[in-house]
Amino acid sequence: MSNSKINKNKAFIDQEIVRKDEAKGLQNLIYVKDLSLWHGKQQTLNNIELNIRDKGITVLLGPSGCGKTTLLKTFNRLSDIYADIRTEGAIYFEGNNILSRETDVYDLRQKMGLLSQRPQPLPGTIAENIRYALQLKGINARSEQDDRIEYYLKKVALWDEVKERLKSPAGKLSIGQQQRLCLARGLAIEPRVILADEPTSALDPISSRRIEEQFKELSQDFAIVLVTHILRQAKRLADYVAFMYFGKLVEKGKPEVVFEDPKTETLKEYLMVGH
Amino acid sequence: MRNKKNIEESIAKIVMGSFTMLIVIVLFSILAGIFVKGLPALNWAIVSQVPKGGYYFGKEGGILNAILGTAYLAAGASLLAVIISVPTALYIHTYLFSHPRWQKRVRLWLDVLWGVPPIVYGAFGFNLMLFMGWPTSLLAAIVTVSFLISPVMIRAMDESLQQVSPGLFESAISLGFYKGEIGYRFLLKQTLPGVATAFLLALGKGIGDTASVLFTAGYTDYIPESLKEPVATLPLAVFFQLSSPIPEVKARAYAAAVVLTIIILVISILSRLISKKLSKNKVE
Image (cartoon, rainbow over all chains, first blue to last red; front, side, top):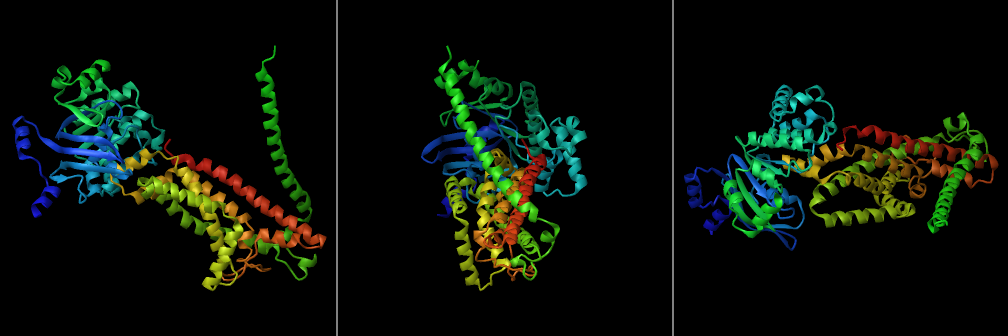
């Protein structure tokens, strides 16, 4: 009885897996175990098994509607806000099952910074957008806020473009700048993981490239989970790839293995069409 | 040869155009009618004095009691309605976000309430007043009118909140804000122009309504000094004076109607201006 309770709520990561990973020199941060998800009666995720490594970019690749965004949104429990969602299985992160009722979702969400498909600045000025995040972290001293605003805007290479107009509305920025502002805001909550849901899909090629470069840089310090359907982007960025199709995880592994030597017909086809 | 579409085009154009013209003419005739009859009777005395002895037989005095009464009533009712409406509209968009079926249900109920005739609100307010042991008073009228205009205000706010991208809500949730906080800090800010318009729309409805306050406001020749005193309103001033057989009193009814119309026009124009001004903080 008490044993099963522990299994449910505490970390129950197969130590065998951890040992194997460490032997390979991998540090995993998130373990997805046998995860299934239903939207009403429709099953969108089907027995997903996946390890997300600490530091580096894990790319969730697949065609639209294959469930990759849904999977991403279970990591910060954003799936909670939608109706009729039911999950089975577990996601272990820092020793706890994210999907457990006891999870402090506010704390969880601050550890998992989400960058959405379209930039979503909050109403207010450029500076305020980062200030909101700082306030959430309990940083209320104005001068420290200002220092950090500068720090994070520099971190996403936006500072030089906006330092003269920090007090102008965030909505006035170009869409590429808005996305970098949102990235800065996400970094300001000091997350452990960055979840990115096709973050370049609304951007022009130059802005996209800048975001990609920043991701490369950030991957030194953060675990990044990047959802994309763009094969080239996956090839450029991935340290680890998971290919999804119709709610199933079809293939996963290092990009040089997965892309050079696909095992399944679905991935072979995707790779062919993608070129 | 002329294309058949050309003929159909001109018929369609004439039909649509004439009905548009018809309704515009009707609207302007109403305005013209009121102004033609009311302006001659409108003077400084009528807007600056309360009715004096023999006023209702055509002697001296004015409708200041009704003008100020309407102002008090409208201010009180719209304030109370805002207190009811803002949390309700935000609730629909934050906590009910995860329950689309309930969102639909609540919207349907509000639309039904919007459609309930004001006289029914009047009857409800009257019963409520008796139940609470209030006299016919400013308080009873404020409560009744606030119920009347709340559905309008909530649904108008709701409509403008529906323009906000769900992505904004998602992003704020992902940052770790709780839902209520997102409502008050971001959704409200994002839809401030819409909220202001909703407020003025409901205010206009409240000011112009007669039936809902017929039983609850009472009527008085004095300016109320507390919530427990009866209050005169402009629509009722029009109503009572128009039913008088004395021509001078009838003319004053039109003067009161002019004042009422001007107030409503000013509110409409103001709501347009404000909604333009407040769009500053909006994220496109």
